[in-house]
Amino acid sequence: MRMVFGVLGLVLALAIVGVLMKKQLHATGLAGVGAGPAVAATGAEPAATVREQSQNIQRKVQDDIARAMQQAAPARAEEPSQ
Image (spheres, one colour):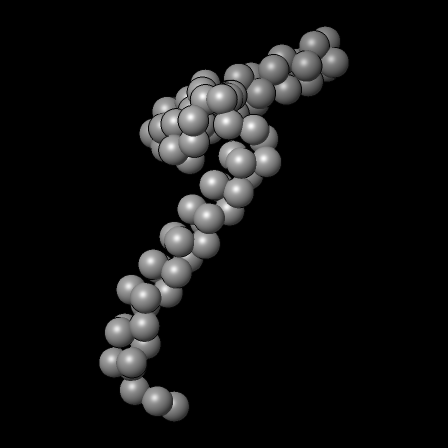
């Protein structure tokens, strides 16, 4: 009986985690992880090779980081020095 409750508890916990993951993926727009969303997110053509897709993702991440650093630069300049 104790083992049955243990297994049911694990199944329930797994179900809760699955539902939360599904909601989070839908909220971020990454539902249906596979070639389709990755290609659409990177802007690469569907016929692009894996290497080209990888380079596009790397370029996008570098651009995003550079943009974030540029946005943070004025805020850091306004902070008083310690």
